[in-house]
Length: 169
Length: 94
Figure: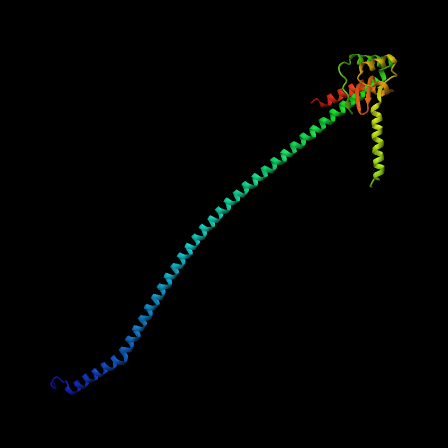
């Protein structure tokens, strides 16, 4: 060994040094570094999990929002349809009521017109009868002399036949 | 206004007596003065009436013919009555 220039003692010392160096590095450098790396990996994994959770939550929210929107739209459509139906019913009722009122007014007006017509007809008839009576009476008063009156009276008496019927005035 | 019962009773009695007296009389209305022949003709025609208390009156408005009144009862044989009936008939015709 000496011929090869290798010092056995130095070699042993260097081996011991190396072992010691290895043990020290492993214990005080590599191990904490590995722990640090593991922690970092753990943190990364945690971040990823949280991110996934958030994404999932966001997806759920979007889905719920979409469902809510669909539901609201459906409810609104139902309400609109219901309101439209009620409005149509109300409109039909109002039209029916208006038609009924109009018919009643028409009937009333017709009745009133008929009554007025009847009254007018009676009035005219009354006036015609009274005027005719007045004209005939005046003409007879002016034209009848005592001789004619006597003749008419005798004619009436002559023509009068049958039993006498007295009536209350 | 309250009417005195005594006055009311007297008035009623007076009116009843008047109506009773009126009932006894026969009033004959004519447009001119009837002669005896006509009066007799009338009495003969209506011989079922009591002509003892008959009053003959002139009324121009009846035009011609006669009206006999006994109390509230009337026999209308006047031209005015005929015209009046005709007027009513005209009025009643539709």
